[in-house]
Length: 280
Image 1: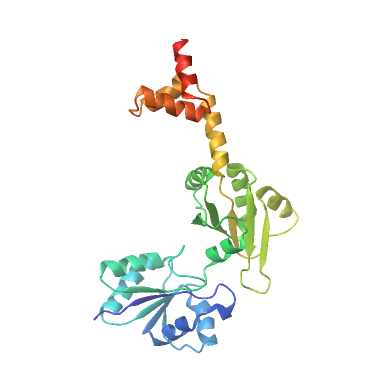
Image 2: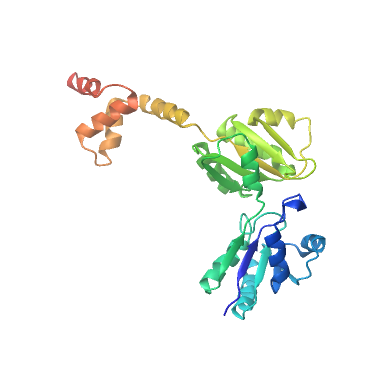
């Protein structure tokens, strides 16, 4: 029988958030795959866990995944941990999970701390619908494409950012999204945890005089559905009625239905659109 891969969430700051189930599992497995063994040894020593570790990180995720899968094929159980939080979330653990499923190896997740969810619940913004973008890409074109998508995103947006890039990212968000509400969270669950509900513009003003410190989670308000409707209506109003009709007719919609849709878009009655064409 093959072994099992255990995805074990570790604290994002406060060691009291380590679950008893994770501690027990880390003691019982044959091997722990850790993002940074030098960092994880402190955690394991704190909980008196003596299981052997091996490194598994962004730069060895392909070849080491093959090695770990082979170990599990031989019946060994492996626990995967990251430096902080839940493995496979903005983390190379997703590669190992994929390799396990391809090899028919069972995978289970032991839930616990997650910075993105912790920040979302603290943000004061809508939690019903949200999207997680993690760190924006370093590549300028790729980043620009994502920011362009986020302009129209109506869900609450969650981003990660390092302190030395925070101001630049806030500037890019302001240019792309305007001065929306934002909650900046840093040092989550730690002694100096900070949660700052503000706006993107005001955050930039604050960091003009204050140096960002610590790892940040940014929770950004999505575009309201009402705002999207206003902008869409403005776009329709900039067109002639003929151009507006043509947009629908190009999609194969018949004239009668197109008139109805145009009237709805422009906030007028279908009769108004009909009378407009009669007068032409």
